[in-house]
Image (cartoon, rainbow, N blue to C red; front, side):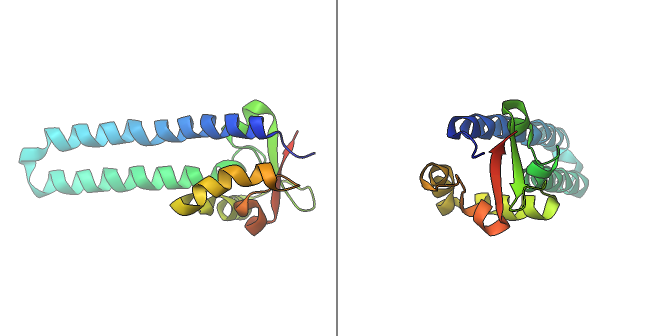
Length: 138
């Protein structure tokens, strides 16, 4: 059954909060290290860059893999009772999660990704069409 648009939006905001926490907490730590190691020369700069890279990688990993974390549901989708499935109704894996979420990295597509589930008869967005997936009610 096609997922409720309202539930999808709620899940989107929950996942955004989770992703924000995954980025903001390490970023604050990174800034703290940078401020406190300013006088330590190259060591401080290298540590800052490593922590910054780790923060970016963590955020990207969550963004791309979130739908494969809990049996086809991101934390937000799990909380509102949604699941992402393949065309044959089986649970998606990492590959499908990356394919369906990579479009969020293209800013010009973000509004289309939010609106398309409203106008597509199956509630699919561009990422779903690329990955051959659909969000359904559990």
